[in-house]
Image 1 (cartoon, rainbow, N blue to C red):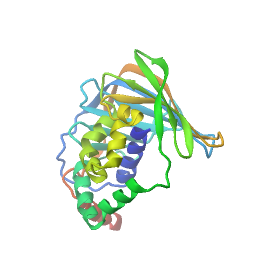
Image 2 (tube, rainbow, N blue to C red):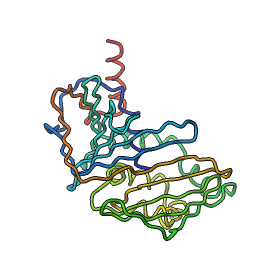
Image 3 (cartoon, rainbow, N blue to C red):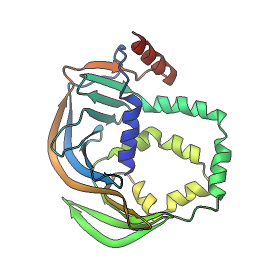
Length: 271
């Protein structure tokens, strides 16, 4: 789940950015992947499902994701995360590629947060007695996913219960790239107090924070038994996938600050 949410956040940040700059990132002629993971996600509000396709490399040089309404249909946006810390977004409809450096943007955002009393906020959350504890434990159940074994964690929260399955694989997954980009800054915001201690020792969180930990299934329901979230793996295949960068206009923001990106976008909109 965390990798899906983080991909959605990244896409919202960069979907609408199209200013032209001199390329800095050495964009390859094509991105070549070794594994394809297909998952389906459904929520509680509608009966509709979305399909997510993730692409991985053995080397860990980069990973990618796209989503669509149909299992066999490509989405308009494809997002690539690189080990070097870049995010590359393909907009197939507009034939645009946009490049950003999330670590640089996070640094800018951390500078803005100095005006917010994050220490007071996090201290309040740590001592707030109104939220019951979140519990999880291995259920003892496992299942096979290709050549990997997925383990179930039973979850009990203040407003929902369910299960999350995690498999240890032999290639980096999206969460590894995001931890590389944001992990230090996020842990710094949380501090080294009771909250971070609980997260680091919590069985489920501990499993999710391990390198190459792939979430394969999620089934969560509220206290009345109504489905809140359902995620299931359709397939995980060792397959060669090549995504060409040819024929796209490239907008490279990898050396821009957050304010510079906003300025470039405003100029584009006013032209």
